[in-house]
Length: 358
Image (cartoon, rainbow, N blue to C red; front, side):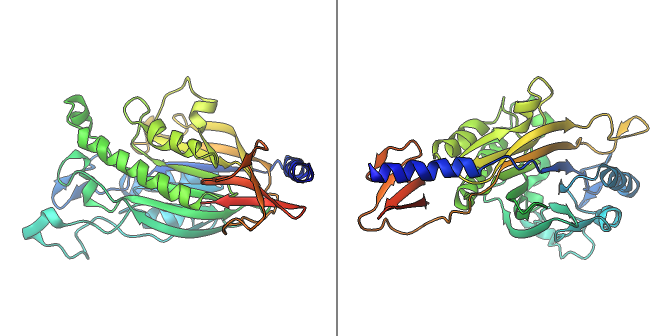
């Protein structure tokens, strides 16, 4: 009885100290369409925004003033874009363009060439504390001179650790997944593109589970995925939910499910114990992202506002073997003799604490 009393006293404290905080912050994801019109004499982006259009994109983003900007295809017009943002934002490392100038090209073996740049760019307001922690290439791609040319660049994801103005901590992923050319989709020749995305969702899932702790995770980017054709739910969402360590949700599905699904998404994961966030608004900005009635690029910005609804209790994670004589309970208060991966409450000698098994 003493052990259970301590257990539920701790659990009551966990829920009681998780009071609503109320801080709000905004995040946007946007493919800025920064490919040149030709790569190695191959036409790839003949209707792209170029210098002038990219300057207008920068002006748009500056006016919107999102706290966190996660961009994709920031390739050949980076200087034009960054000069518009650098006063209000700090920018992550740029990994380069996809032009032949200043690149060593083996023209006799073009099939082996890959530009070592990912096109990803994270930007954050000056009063946020952000630490870029990883730049990870996908382990599987498909398409060199066809199928959207995905093997020409080093697509992947980046992970950021963010401390908000109130001190609440979150983790943000930015990514760009393999695309399917519309002609390949129409001709039902995109099976290998789908396989590549499955592999990428799987790789992302494993990285998320490796770093899932008491901080919420926001996952954004040009995922080139639709729920009607890609098993995002089975490969990613259901697996993470099944661990019992966190819950995955899609902001579009929560706030705008009757609207148009896009390749660009904002997912978030709330840990079972720790800080919690809640989406407040969702925007697919088709009206504002225009110049003379035409879109500034081939993607529209997707943005969301989140509210911090509870804070981490400050209880340390324990990642050691179960102490001798201790008892472990699940989050429903049931005794567990052989705990698997997940979050538990461990009681020993009248004291209890959170135990995370990874």
